[in-house]
Image 1 (tube, protein in one colour):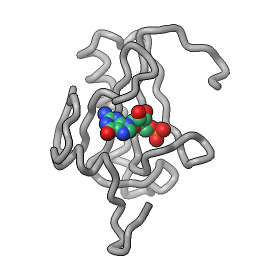
Image 2 (cartoon, protein in one colour):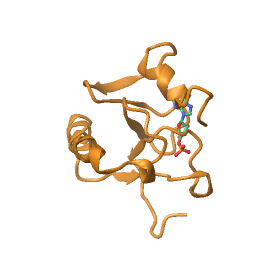
Image 3 (cartoon, helix red, strand yellow):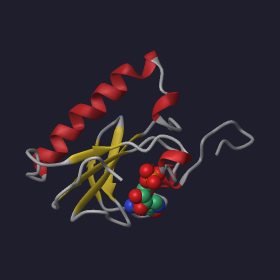
Image 4 (cartoon, helix red, strand yellow):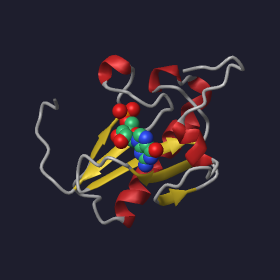
Length: 119
Ligand code: 5GP
């Protein structure tokens, strides 16, 4: 998903730049969270870094603070939505693991029962 300029342009970049609409629930300098367009649970939020990391396994040591920040923001969002005691956090890493948008994103899912192991 890398173009000839070596950048990773995805639909999520357009959402970050507000070129296409999204139902945003949280934003700061480093990340953005918005409702998934095709929710898999009553609450389904996508949390993305503004830095276009393609997938989690592409992050390196220089991204440590950013990745930690995302985890802290999960706490903020889940408290805001009053789901802090019952949510599932999912990262699909790579096409074979179900990743369809190649800009790192965390799925925050809540509002229904979740089975284990996951499908
Ligand atoms: P993945 O399958 O890559 O882990 O998850 C990508 C997610 O992005 C999917 O759950 C899909 O519904 C969501 N998605 C794809 N395009 C859009 C969009 O334009 N807007 C929003 N809000 N979600 C999207």
